[in-house]
Each structure stands twice: as C-alpha cells, then as structure tokens.
Image 1 (tube, rainbow, N blue to C red):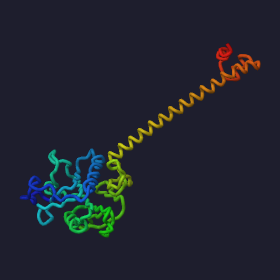
Image 2: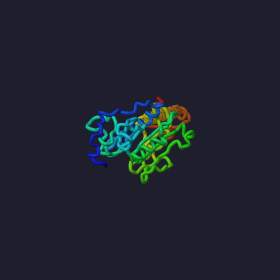
Image 3: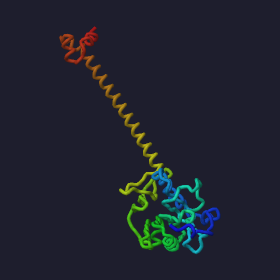
Image 4: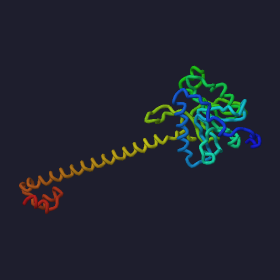
Length: 275
C-alpha cells in the first residue's frame, strides 16, 4: 500500500474522464464482463469488500501520466468497498483506493487488436495486477495464442498458466469458459467456479432450474393423480364384475354365504344383488 502523501496534487475522480471513450467492437465486450459482475453479486452478495468494474478507466501512477487510464473490459479489486461514500464510482482511481490495484484484469480480443498481448500486457504487469486474463474466442489463431489465457504475476513478471477453470486462491474463485444460459440462449460464457471446479449458476439459470423443477413436480403430481384414477376405475370394474357374478353363482346352487365367500363380498351386498 502506498502512503497517502505520495498522492498529493493528483486529480480526483471528479476531475478525470470515466473512460477513454473508445467504443467496443462487439456486444460481448460488455455483455460477458457484466455476466461475471452479476454472477459475483449472487456469489458474494453478503460481502462488501470487493469491486468489479466493466469498461471503466483505471487511473494509476505507474504510467507516463496519471491522467491517462488503462481501461480493461473488466477488472476485480479486493479489499475495497463496493460503493465509496454510498456512491457509484465514475472511474477507479488507485490513489483514492488506498493504493489498492485490481487483483484481476480481463481483456477480450476483438477484430481490432487492442494491445492485449503487448501494451496492455506491460501496463498491467507494471501496475502489479496479480492475474491478467485474455479471452480470445474468435481470433486466437490469428494472434497465435490460446482462446483463454491466464497470466499470473510472479516476481514482477507475468507467467502463462494453462487449464480451465483456473483456480485463483487469492480470489477464492476459479475462472473459465462454460456453456451457460444468457438471454434465453445457451452459449459460451466466462464464468466463476468453486474450488471443486463446479460452475456457479446465474440468476437466469437458477430461475430456469426452479421452473423446470416446478414443472417436473407438477407433471409427477398429474401422473400420480392419473394413476390413482386409473387404479380406482380398475377397482370399480373388478367389483362390478364380482357383482355381476352373483346371480350366476346363485343359479348354480350356491347359498348367499357361499357366494359372499367366493366373491369376497359382504353377505348383505350379495343379498341386495339377488333381491
């Protein structure tokens, strides 16, 4: 943590732009980081010591000037309040966050290369971001990389780590690709995982699961009701068949008591059938 006096004469968040105003290439650059954010709100809903930013400027003092931010597609900071002074952040200003830099930065490669493998790589490394994730589902062959790469800062240098989901003990979560429900469609998403490698379901998926379970329970109840009605109808048909046999057995010379025993009917019922 950097001492506060090192931040004297630096601009405040109110004086700095929120981002670099560069439009995204495709909707996934906003959609998937927001998916991770909403998922974190479910997983860590009772925690207030984290912040996840999407397409937000991160201002720091390790570059040429503190007035030029780096803008990740998504980033996670730990040990900071989710809301500062009960207000939403306009940007993430490191010197207003007690010197806490993001623990994780996410970049999504698009049609127009944005320095994910070079300039931003160097910025995050110098800034001290512990985990740098590059997601490149479409252009990884063009860029001669893997679709999902995790770089961890070790002794001041990023080292590539392979494997999904990738467990991050400092975060207490894993991160990786998965097939998830998003906007009513099943598609590839980035998702959080627990230490056992099980994916955390989104609110949409939880609702879909609850609906499926309710529909299944309703179908099972309807099936049970139909089976009960069928059993009742079969019992009624079987009883009617025994009642229809009373007269025939009586004509054969059997007494009321004998017929009652043979057909497992009360004597009074047998007598009523003969009257």
